[in-house]
Length: 344
Image (cartoon, rainbow, N blue to C red; front, side, top):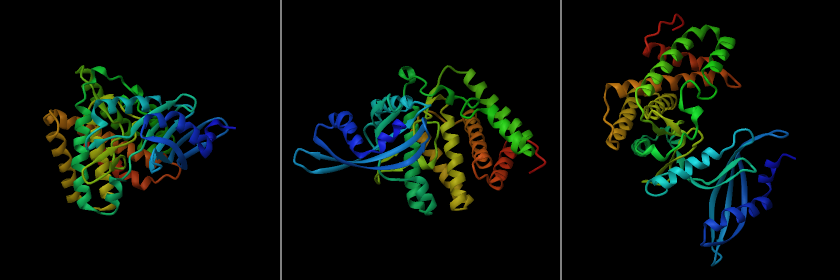
């Protein structure tokens, strides 16, 4: 039996959380029960990749019940220790208090190769985009900007590169070589544009990082679905698999591209897209010691184009490809980088 199946046994999970989590909450005396929900459940004979929520009922000393959402992210071939270490580092550097938050790291299991953490409750920014709720969008985006500014302000002298492979365009999974191979195999009409685009964005990143010894902690997967509204004043950011040391402009460019892409998809108002992007940029630099200049803008644009190509590639190589959704994105990047492409 695949050992990960134990995490779908309520009795086993109650025992595990009693041993590992209950001591972290001295006001509670007992783990009464759990309800198990799988957000990702890829389980094969000996391998697995799962994200599981345990809706956990605790009893305090007066027998009053409290429900806490506890999650596990586990992968048989990619141990999630870096996720636990990332969360623990950020929790100890100011994200465990205040209105800009993260999930609370609880423990790492070497047996399951999984990180257990207390989840955050709320709705993500993309949900409000889908509902065309402009009031909420304009309330959350400035807080998201402040969150990233706070992350990028952390002194990295004590930080390690939590995901070294992810810290460069060239090696971010699945890597440039693999992407170009897939495109050449399946979409040869795009390979010339792909090669030129990746040559440019990769070269620009390398040149900047070679010019400075300074690196910043970056989230690495900045997009609206990872921004959670917890209350009218409080947000959290989730998913720290890709946290690494790189250029802070990467988070800004990535978030702006994904924000634009998602708003255009659901609201289809270019003027509004420009307004919301400006809100994000203005609030980022308002909350940062960094001042926007032409060099920083060029780096933001570079990561914007790179993220756009990641979006285009996703639609080309997913299980049920949607090349019609990729084409305008590829053409947009070609135009932005002054690349001549006869297909556009």
